[in-house]
View 1 (cartoon, rainbow, N blue to C red):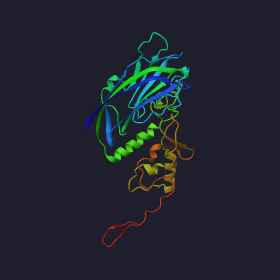
View 2: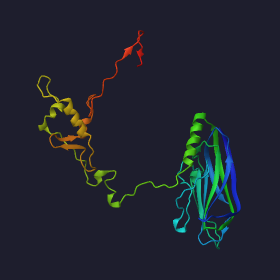
View 3: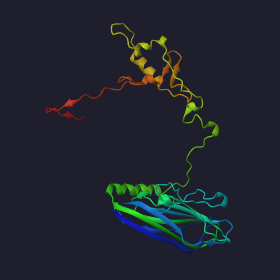
View 4: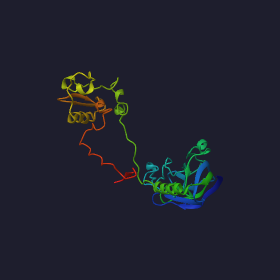
Length: 306
């Protein structure tokens, strides 16, 4: 186990933006292979104030990853016509991400604020681990289309704890990180809940109060002969296997969120869900399972595998 400190920079005197007002500046750092690398500390610094001639402000996404950044088709700022943002800070392969801006296109040229993940307090403690033997420092630049950004200078500090990894873990880790790094071009996850429907989603009885209603077995259907204990010397009517299976099948029916578990049958009455609890082996709904193959033994007593 050893400590590895990395201090590196991205510096460009002039960067031309494409028709979408987008540019990528990237730098690769090679690490020792067959190692598990754990981030101990990470820091970021703005060394200059970039300038450009444009109407909309300039924003920079600074991202540190084990693999090259795959930008997406998702917007960075739709109102400013700035698309192709980088991966989410919560992505497994993002070790550090900062958004710097807005840099103004005209005086006063003030040092802009920046937002980073992990934040400064968390970034000073051990955070993420990775296997890939490379680090990429990438700056995604968003501004007006066709303009030129001048005087870009950013610095990054990383403190890594490295130790030799098991070859299997190393190979699987690199494969997984490579797969995740290829990214998602367009993401749309999470669900939208109307405020009027918020209750009853996870805790259904909030909407009605009290406990969920329950079904009771109908004593007139002969069903209690199966569930109630009788005196051993007292005659009783027995349920058939087919009848028991029918009860079990009906007890497994789906119920609405505000209704009792189980089902109400027109002939048998209420059949609660607990009918299927603690059943004897073989009392299942559906076809009868075929017999297990007979066990054969060799002359020395060992079981023969057929």
